[in-house]
Length: 341
Image (cartoon, rainbow, N blue to C red; front, side, top):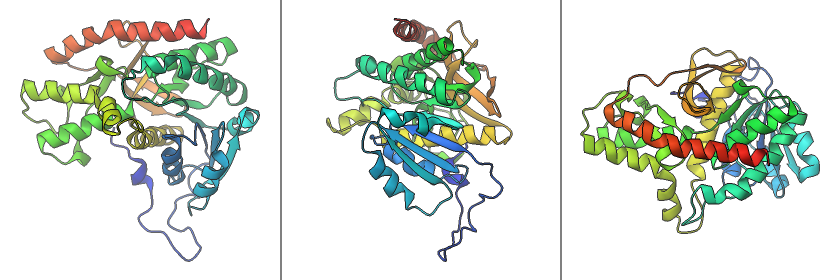
């Protein structure tokens, strides 16, 4: 889980009009589409994906504002060709031939809002976008960022089932920000280099459904149970921390864009046959008795190669696992019910 989109970037680039620094000749052509590219997450995500040399074509789609974002990002001297699309009539063109589709579309959280408050708006957006994905790029890997992920991923699965295109290996809820936060907070408390830290985060992607497995963190540190509880709570409340700090002017957009770019990079590496690419993600799963669950996933040429188990849990984590199940089950069922209404 230590892949980084920034580590795929060249150390040196030529300023004399050549691109010798980019290993583009050896990388296969890959098209990535970002749906919601003009938004708070979409814009920095578009920038980060433009920096990724594994991307040959980057399609930026939103209901409005995308031509400006596309023009801006297109001036960056990296491999990918940028294509901007605005309005529903251009959605099909944005999606055609996509290998990976990233969906940050929707409204952000505001102070006092829970992820469930976002449901009615974002659920409809995801349903409509996934209907188009089923039609125009049914074999793409779909990375769902739009919250509440615990419900929007089940919605996407139901849409694809109805269209006859569902492949559970190709649908992902992006929970990478929970991992990014857990790594950062753990490194700070354990006083170790964050670059060396790994922390699996399982469960879901909202509040108590987020379960960081600090007992499995590496490098190991002898933290007290109070420290572990505080780190767990901070990881679970990380989104709220940012919403409150921005005082009504936004949510976690920049860190989410970074996390989204990390996970998309892992998907691209998997598609390209890089071995042992492992990230946590919210996927169809038999790890627990719930139909969807976030855990470590090995990525490969068809998406999910293997959903990995939870490993040994501490007593505190076992309690957390049982405590999260009712809320996660309810959120999954809410998504399925919405999709079939």
